[in-house]
Image 1 (cartoon, rainbow, N blue to C red):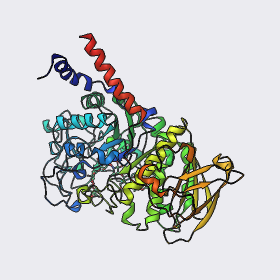
Image 2: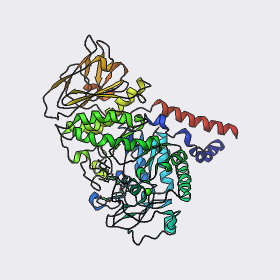
Image 3: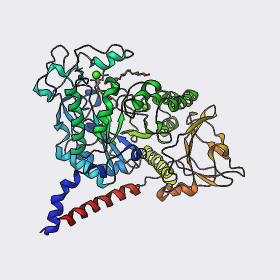
Image 4: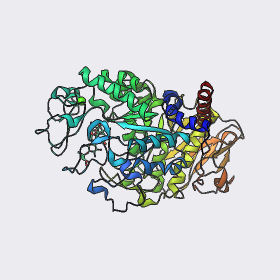
Length: 543
Ligand code: ABC
Ligand code: CA
């Protein structure tokens, strides 16, 4: 039997869920987030579904929001605290020349949810479950277009919910020249198999609808952040009102490698872009042992001068649109160096599901493999590697209040290695590859700021080194592995627990990863749970 107090409490829960400000990420709190990107249809499904999922077939495979809910420990155990899920709205049904809308980007009606992924309650439960673990929910939103199977027969009607008349759309034309911004904004994405009718975002009917829609979506599902699709296909003038209506942190896709071009969306559009400008030089730096590190170093400089705030960029190596790095690079050390970069650099790190499982899928659709085939192994080398990277980042942020907001310095250390100085995290990334013989480099005290004779731990191998009498650190790069250093006195949970067995003060320790450790809830998360209790208590008092 419920007592009357607990009955009141249960009755108040929906009210409580409608207070987004307690949980949502803003620009300041997002800097310390670490995001796990998943494709909802492919991340997890109910165990009773056993059909074979073949990515190349481009069909729904059965992944759901409630199955994500069951796997939050798997994500949190790797140190990620934010989950980016695929678009949630209803999509065109049936099959097309490019398969089914399993990825969620082929919007039909933004007023309804995609029932393939579950119910509204399932999505709300996912949000609640994340929050109760001190985690955050980021939802992907598509504003630029809807979808249709043909450009010539497309007739807006009530199936498209709010966008049922031709005034809601730009007249048909394909985008054929991505350097022509008018085309990029006004013409249609897609092709003859699946056309993406371009919404007339200049119309106040359309823009007002979207501004209300995002406000309601955030509030109905207590979202903490949004990922915005196809940002460069909508005029910059549209975005400031939209992102202020969302009133949560945003990360937006401006798919272009030119930092100046992308930077304008942050300064004028108030959208925080994914770091595509760094993505291309990053892959070229580490995709072969003769990769170009100077291009990456130069880009870090260009980024500083092109973005109003580089510390809010979204850094990634893999995602659902590009061939996985591992589809062309097989050297384990090159793979680790490239994956380390987003975690030790300015901005917010993104890990793409399946990287921890060693997936090697190439271009879309092959990079959207089902994760269940991996059995969600938390003991794999790469799962532990991501855990270590997240722990290093968290330790640096806990030790220094300016870690997330101050900008890094990147310089050349040798022909095959670079130094990334993001105090107090100091990393050496190399592209010498796993067959390389040991190489010695020195991190000068003038760069690290380390004093004489202090212990420095490599978060990845757990090897402990000591600076010399001048504060310089002699580092041996072994088998081309990355090194992510932090002063031992502020290492927090880095290399503790089962990982401590790897700790060695000799230089002979190999670069094995630290053990999987479930990260303790951070201070902010426990504060928030306290805040929920306080609000609940206040409400009870008021009754
Ligand atoms: C479907 C098939 C694919 C097929 C494709 C042609 O059509 O499934 O197999 O290859 C969704 C689905 C996709 C689907 C598309 C189209 O819809 O996920 O599977 O592909 O039906 C976003 C999302 C993406 C989503 C959509 C649509 C948009 O992240 O998942 O796709 O809602 C453009 C857009 C970008 C979009 C991307 C897929 O296409 O701008 O928003 N992504 C150049 C252009 C870019 C262009 C890119 C495409 O090519 O400038 O605008 O992206 O590859 C750099 C340059 C860049 C250049 C790159 C390639 O090189 O600086 O400018 O990008 O150096
Ligand atoms: Ca457009």
